[in-house]
Length: 186
Image (cartoon, rainbow, N blue to C red):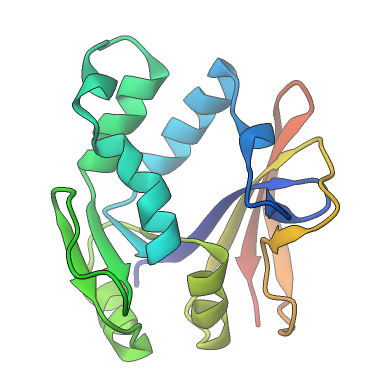
């Protein structure tokens, strides 16, 4: 069965955005972005909630693929090459290619996707990931940890659930940024 991987860029104290919703502190260096591109390349489908989709839809902009050599252009091509499923009750349409909109997150649909997909599936956004964790759907947690603390904001992991993890790998990437890859065991 294909894995569902929750991927984040987070602060050292466990947040993906600060109390004001900002995440400018997480902007990757070229080296970190190259590493992220390698991590993202295998995914065939991205699962997003509305807010995460609205952030990620940026990668649909035409000008991002004008420079064939840049890590930005490469990531835009990776993102565009994958299917996207957006879960939202408020959105009426999505503007990016290869993107479908569903009004609710149904765990049995995600289990079926994992069973029939030929490439790993990524889930993005803390709120949606929390629902997937609660349903026992998340197989791996992949975190790029940035050496900054933000004090409060949007927590990367569910605060009201217990989950156990086994470290699969760790790697120092650049300027104190590390990648931690965990298998979710409960």
